[in-house]
Length: 264
Length: 264
Image (cartoon, rainbow over all chains, first blue to last red; front, side, top):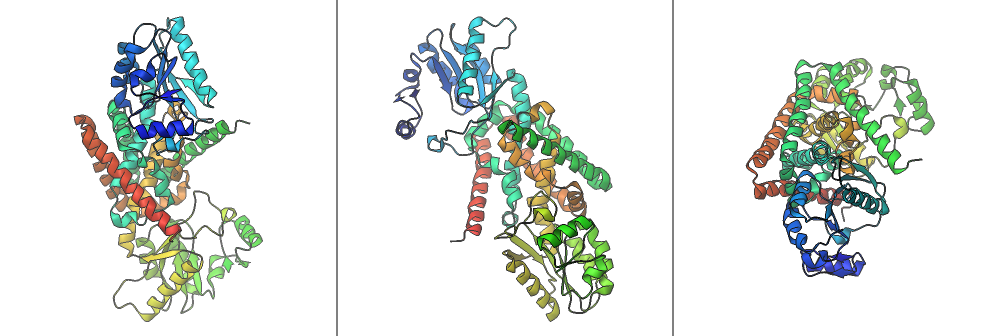
């Protein structure tokens, strides 16, 4: 396991922790002779990294990533990587708002979902199919559940369920008066936990998936428009129904999630 | 400690648990001869309850509540309660999305904030001031921190920091496609936890504070409008700054909250 990263401190720490066997001086050195390359940076850096590793990868090598958007990286890999090198997009949905190898945890991926976006052409080569199976086996070996989606569906659904909620959490924090923030309870802290994430990482995600995020935002606005309508007409029965539908939907999601973690 | 509630089952359970010493058959029976009355129902019922207890309360009695909005109950109490009876609004900010005496916990209030909205007239009677001090002592005795606000400021700030986040969490759940909900991670579950609350309870809060909730929603929209602008112009630096400002604001809130729980 060869690691490369921007900060020498992180590489030394990763060596100390046994997370990597060897630290490379350059990205190209790290990728030379690799069977599997895992890109784990903000999505805005993928294009440049693929350009740097493309010349040193040998036929049979497989490249994947851990980015939160998939259309752009799949497209860039298709354009930049050479013949005989396979790219399989991955989105392991695990992590925390903390950043750095020092926050690594062996159980971080246990039972969590990883979305693969392999080449979906009906006549994908045997090589591409094998690469997807290898990457799936990799994530399963560290405890993840794996599902497959095409890149466009991934980006559309994740805008709704992850990227927009992140942006809304940030907006909810930013709109508060200092005086009101002092009155925040546990509910507000939970609702805005995701807003504590790294700004640069999320900038890349939101820009890369901007079309879908804007569409998601329009759908949220439509739902909030329903609420305003109910408040205007003071339709208590319909308002309670609107809220209960949300509560029930979240309860059934919670039951489903608990079932996945303890599937007995 | 005399309890009254809609469901006989809850009263029996409360007796079993030692939460009350005696269960009354009617609200008026429960309030007769009381030193302190605590109204703990959805806010939409306060008006009717105040009407029922007003005739049986004796001079010196103090009435408070645990509602999440304060303008309406303060106004109703001023109109309905007799001379010599004091009303002091309370909003103990503790609880969970679970409902019922069976979820009672002795440590529920420890270190949490209770907002009092006593009569704020500069020439409030000695009686009114004593009542506010008594209610403050009551909440402190069960472990709460207490602050005082006027009812209008309370409702305005809570719309931003509690009522709107609740409505937004519900809207975020409601806008999801089933397919996307299956991809929800821990971040989405946290961000929408508050949407699991009781629909009837929250209907009352949102209707009672509808003017402020609509104003809060306009402020959220303004913030989300800023985001859309940054996505349109693809201004990465300003977008990262917008996100980082949210993250930093939440981090400082978190530090402040942790300091309150462990004030050493």
